[in-house]
Image (cartoon, rainbow, N blue to C red; front, side, top):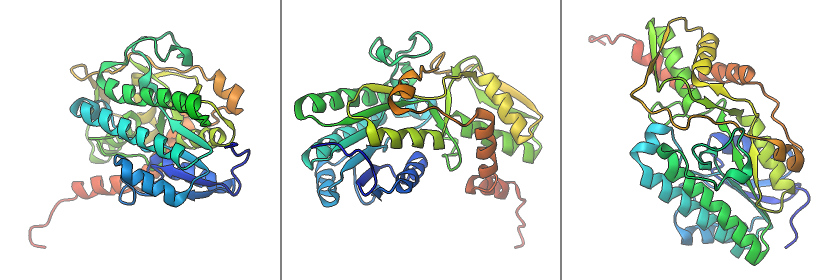
Amino acid sequence: MTPPSTLGGATVLVTGGHGFLGRVVCRHLEAVGAYVTAPTHADLELRDPTAVQRGFHAVQPDVVVHLAARVGGIGANQRKPATFWRDNLLMGVNVLDASHVVGARRVVVLGTVCSYPKHPPAPFREDALWDGYPEETNAPYGIAKRALWTGLASYAAEFGLASAYLLPANLYGPDDDFDLERSHVIPAMIRKCEAARLAGVPEVLLWGTGRPTREFLFVEDAADAIVRAATKVNDPTPINVGTGHEISMETLAHRVAAITDFTGVLRWDPRRPDGQPRRVLDTSRARDRLGWTATTSLDDGLAKTVAWYRTSKWAAADEAARQPTDPFV
């Protein structure tokens, strides 16, 4: 089927549409006139192929945006490697097959920077994706998401399915997951610094050595790239989506401490893993194919995220935990 040239009036099914990134993507899609349906996990179990086929037949989507994923930080990946591999692979395979069966005209799949080899030349270029094994702490997750690119390429070759495959840098922003058991680095740093400042604790303990570098992409910028891909990209050639700027964990921690007004000591625990030594993306393909560049600076994005966090349930929970309990109430 001919892919749509505009999303105005198109039916777009978004998996993971109630998650951190998904809610922003749905809002951006609606802003360009798409009819968006975003089933919850309770509505549609993506690991069940029969349920996925049934759900997709009911919606009859023109475009599918697959954002649903089992995600987490280094600790979560280390504790549940099989779960991360299995769930991400199952969800992706089921979504891809159902999209083909119901005749979707374009499928967008979100990959991960964790799919890259542990030591590719920096900045990472898309052609290096298969040049080695990913960093060990999140390799099962990265391998599962990398395999979905093979699926997209295979469905394009055999069935002519139009598709796009995006590789985003580490995402952050308002409404992220600040649970310290599951969160990524920026929400973890923000919550630790805020909690220490308010409690008067003189130091914050952070994972690793502080030496690795990462690249961070504000969630609104990521959503813009995804909507552009859903509008115009018809083949699964991987596309990096990021800022092209890297920052060390130590420098990032000091930025977060400054924005949260934490003036204590930042102490590193080298017994904890660093993860991949370096991450920074070459984003020239995104400029060429999507007409897209990130527009939010890291300092602006961090300030917006901290402002949101201070009114969130996470901050409220930490505040409640600090209050003394009156045994006579």
